[in-house]
Image (cartoon, rainbow, N blue to C red; front, side, top):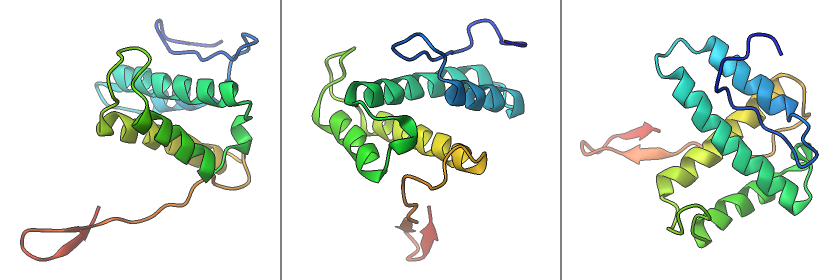
Length: 137
C-alpha cells in the first residue's frame, strides 16, 4: 500500500480482507483535505465506517445491497440501544454524524461508479429563523 500514513484506519472484514472501497474513500479524503484536523476527521470517519460495515456484516448484507431501509434500521438500532462500548445511550449528534458519514461514503461510491443508485433520498430541511424567514439547512 503506497504512502499509507502511520495510524491510518484500515477496515477489514471477517475474513481479514481489506474493505477496499472504504479504504480508498478514506485515503482520498485524507489526500484532498487541506484542513489541519484531517487526520482526526479521517480517524472518526474510519470509526463510523467500521461500525457501519460491522453492522452490515452481522446482518449478512453486502454493502452494495444496502438501501434506505437498512440505513434506517442502523439509525434505529442506535436510537433504541445503548452503546456496546459505554453502556450509555447514543447522543443524537453521534447518530447523525455516523449516518452522515455513511451517506457521504455512498455518495462517493455513486460518483465513482461503484454502485448504480443511491441507497437513500436526500431531503432539504428548512429552518424558521427568529426574523421569520425560512433558510435551507
